[in-house]
View 1: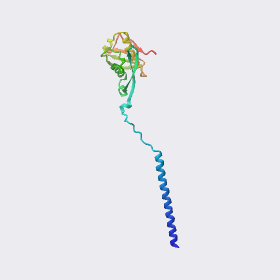
View 2: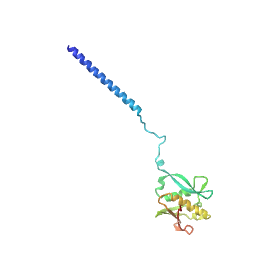
View 3: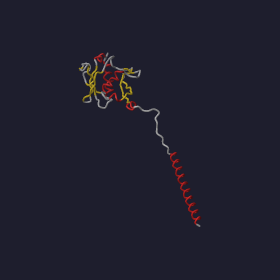
View 4: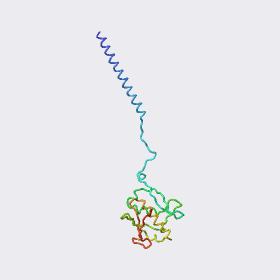
Length: 180
């Protein structure tokens, strides 16, 4: 009778072990199935975005078309170049000229921007004397308005004042404000 009791206990323990193994294996399989249904993978872009691309911005520059109308042109630039003196940099971009074939810059050849500063929402632009080589009032008007339209794209700018070699010029006497 003692052997029967031991055999019965062994069978019970074996059944308990088998049932436990069954539930362990079943639970393991369920975890694998649910993880297959909820698979997430990291997004890998086709191309890494460089820090320069992250700083890229578009500025609107104004030029003259063949009908002497002022038109804007968007240009992609690294926003870091605007940190030092954004007013001077924008005028330098104007002096470089447009990328679009049907637009032209109104500035006389060899005109340079020497400096630019802002005070009371007015940007004072100091140009080289070549600016005075414009041919007529239409060209002068286009110089003023392309520059004014470009710079008033910045929130803090309401007007511009033009100097020639750090001095006021009788050809550009006033402070110019964009009329809406």
